[in-house]
Amino acid sequence: MKKYFTFLTLILLLACSISQNKISTLVITIENQPTNLDPRVGTDSASQRLHQIIFSGLLVRNERDELKPLLAEKWERINDRTFIFHLKRGIKFHNGKVLDSEDVKYTFQSFLDENFISLRKQAFNLLEKVEIIDKWTVKFVLKTPYSSFLINLTVGIVPKGAGEDFHKKPIGTGPFKFISLDSEKIVLEAFPDYFEGKPKIDRLIIRIIPDAMTRALELKKGSVDLGLNVLPPDLIRFLSKDKKLKILTAPGTTYYYLGINLRDPVLKNKKVRQAIAHAINRKEIISNIMRGFARPANSVLSPNNWAYEGNLKEYEYNPEKAKKLLDEAGYPQRGRKPRFKIVYKTSNSSFGRQLGLIIKDNLRKVGIDVEIKSYEFATFYSDIIKGNFQIYSLRWIGVSDPDIFYNLFHSRNLPPKGANRVGYNNPIIDKLIERARTTYDINERKKLYSQIQKIIAEDLPYISLFYGDNIAIMNKKVQGVKLYPAGDFTFLKNVWIEK
Image 1 (cartoon, helix red, strand yellow):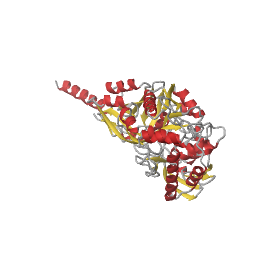
Image 2 (cartoon, helix red, strand yellow):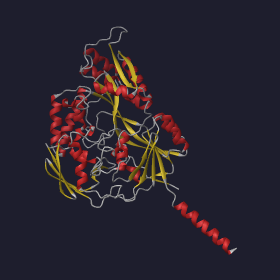
Image 3 (tube, one colour):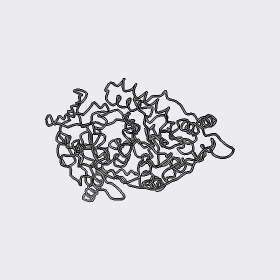
Image 4 (cartoon, helix red, strand yellow):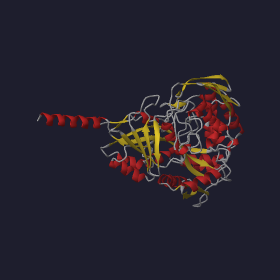
């Protein structure tokens, strides 16, 4: 009998030990497969989210969108063109190699290599050289003063010698190390030597599920634990009734807008653009399409941005004012005939089509006939970057630095050089943007960006629609989720699953 109890005790102890050592796994879902896991190359949303947890940058954005040191112990600006970064010591890559100045130089030198292909290179076109001072100190020298240079130093550092196949098996210093990737999922594991402490979960599985309804059903079944900004508002409302799930929301920086072709013979008239802005019922869009998960927008920058200007020209919903502006622009209403016809281009997503229908109805009420043309996203996007459109709807994700105005509205950045797809050309704006980029005085920059936003709001190369909220839906056992303004995945290192 004594032997029996001893054996039973051993079995119970073993079972308890196995239970305590059970690997904790968090399953999350994303919409699309990442295009490139090399942080120097991948620019799509899925890739960038994964870069945030596999790699670490010299700097990082915190939950208030402020820049803080990460791999850097500290940094100093020696003059308007020179920055020196001091690295933390003893930080390890996932292969055990200790990170030092050679790795930092190698990462940023890539962007100066004419044979290195990356859309990110434009962000470093004002970087002249990177120099090693010692094993733990790096100097960056710019061609000209560039006040937004630091935001680009959030890019993940790669080990010296990362070759052409690096994107297939990336090695970083982040909280999770890469294990595998296929067409359906990405598997990561907690890095035990992560310099800020091992993550609270052992394994992270990121399932790639393109269909929104399937993502919703997997969350409902419990085969997916967490989704961030992956479901349309209607499905969020549907899942909010499930007692096994919980929803967390917070204001976001994703900016939705209408782009207008300023080369178009009708739309180049500012009064026409202003009429369209007054004809669009943003409250209807936010209520009917976004189900309340959004806030009206009046600038590319959101209200939580340090450079945001709140005192801008407002375009309240006012069909009568829109009609008056169209009359003044030389497009009077004659009987039941439309004043003119325009084509609205969008992707074939349900959101794009729904938005198109509301805009079509809004503009019909002021005498503008709208034809909606929807395409598979790649075809639609190709037309937009070529300037083959009259009006279109898109969004900018994770807007955090006001230097975005340079890329969107400086006349130097017409495609293919930049993202000024609407063809905006204003010498005053060009000069203001250039001054804002080259001054480090934060108060002076704020004044300059205030002027820029006021002129943009008057000229309307974009018609602002709304800022989308960040929405996380998860199993109630998931704890520690914290939403960042840009929808970053940084919080995943602190998430755990309640027993």
